[in-house]
Image (tube, rainbow, N blue to C red; front, side, top):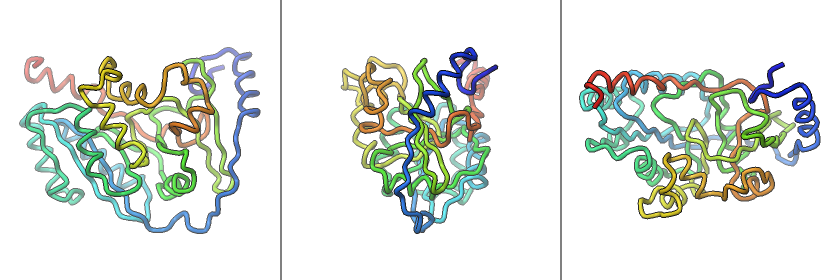
Length: 282
């Protein structure tokens, strides 16, 4: 038998399921009178020379993300391959999704870290939806519901719409679930800040992104990737299996219960390598 999220023996699955029943936290004190009220939400998108992928990503946001309020899309484009970036910017300007002032063009590429800093500084709404140019939603998402939970639970700072089935454990660490029977809805606590589609609490994460991505920050610059820098800025490594610490201090959750199918597909894993080959690997 294969467990959703990691491969385990039958006995290990039985133990994890017993732990799940024991550790499941129920939150039933939310009033459901105004969860679908009108709000605004800034959507920040990092991109780099992949116009075809960005068009798919935007279309899938339109098709699968349900929201009563108003979106403002903010795009940061790194000119990795100038001709492709020019196509992307031209499409973005004519697409109807973006205001002209919300299209940021870096003809000298700054990379993902500084793109995040640039974008998060522009966010004006209490919560923002983080996207990259190569994530395509596959399942409906009620963003009002996610935002309502974040409005009423200050410990929830990031709700991730995951690229795989929600795991029951990561790095052999069982993950804790939270249940909202009024909706109904489940959240599964995670231990790292992952840069995939997610709803972020702006005031919580803005100063942390700015500091974690600072080239002079000796604590984070030893880590290679942006999510690793941010995660290790947010918590010590020895706290990643401390569910109480993670809930009280960081608040990163998968949208859904353990084993729930993925919400989005990563469509750009091979696109960059193909583009590099077109310019002789440079």
